[in-house]
Image (cartoon, rainbow, N blue to C red; front, side, top):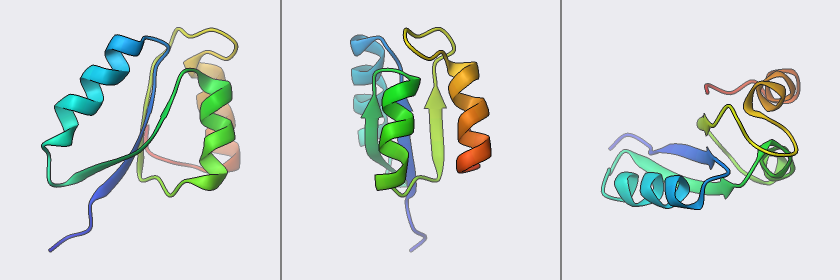
Length: 80
């Protein structure tokens, strides 16, 4: 059995975060390991999580997706 892909969901919309979590919950190949409301929260969570993939909304408060992506790729390159 192959290991599950560990996923971090980053989106400022609660409904989108919930929909993604619910939609992916039934996928035996994916394990949602974290959820963040914006890029700042995602960057705070990353050191504590083992992630293989990150979903990243582009337009978010505090730190948008492109800013967060730049920092993620410098500090911990991860498929997004």
